[in-house]
Image (tube, rainbow, N blue to C red):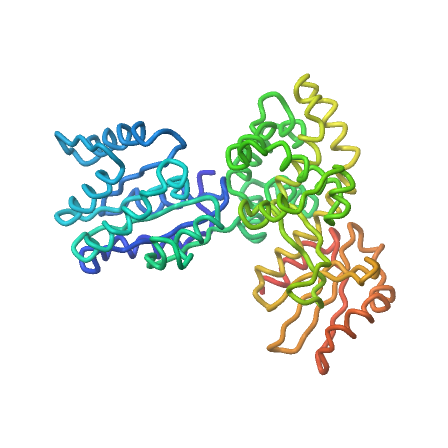
Length: 448
């Protein structure tokens, strides 16, 4: 996309740090966000026009020697340094910290967590070099990573060498629904049905929105363009996940496929796959940040009444429709996959509509807690419960594709058990029906 949407707060914060390093000396920023969320674009926007030069180093999963050669060439080219022949990554970090005692520089190290694969001892080297030089070096070191759990452990784990060395910590999230709507309006694509379709296919991830703007310009039938031999979407799930998942990627893919088909409890997933998946579910949640645990909003933090969902709507779509038809993909039978999508998409997107409304409520910042509810037997399910303790308000909402299918009487009846468990006396309760019919109005209401 030509235009740069949102991120203005992060943009300004990054630029301010780099602008002030002559006075403040060494500053370390951490930036975390899932792949494709727009971290690199944000960094380019922040620094490409700044007076302070920047250096971009990407930690690819190759040998340390190969990275040393690559980085030395970049440094020689970008900084005009001659006769620089480092033997290790430690030498490179040491040189850059020494170089910035004379000249200010922003250094971006991308996929920083993969140092753990290349040479784990480098974390201690960086800590020692940083502590020894930061007060004299005019450097803004930006450590960027795509695995939230690992990056958090590296900088927030008490036993880690770089514990609390960060001065700023940025978590880059997908674009919120209001920005998705703005992008669609800028490309004459906005209406409720299209909004839901784009949400299912992007989840607010900028790279996927870039694809969708291009696809929508090429064809009136979005799925005709999205599901074709020329579409990057077909292999995207594989490209995005296999490297992180490693040798067990087939097991993880099977679990995610099971979840995308509606098997949301551990018992149902294990029954569907005929295998134990407890350890793998924990890793998908805590290490890879690909799935989300959901508990009834009335339950305690340690409740075992858990349902799992795929965090990213795009990945949910990819596993539900693309990976599920991998034989057709291998035969390049894209027409079959499009028919499969068109047959099931109305029902599927109706379920994903709930995540869109949740995202709208999250963006509104009107609630301190948002979740869903179901009783011990899995009955009396309520799609959205949002609580505002400051104003003593509870929003209880049912999500339907069509507003005519919403029944306030039934919703009130289903809510008795929830309200008894919450026991929030004196709270105003609002019952709502959210649907595709009032999506635009709800967005406008909660953006006010």
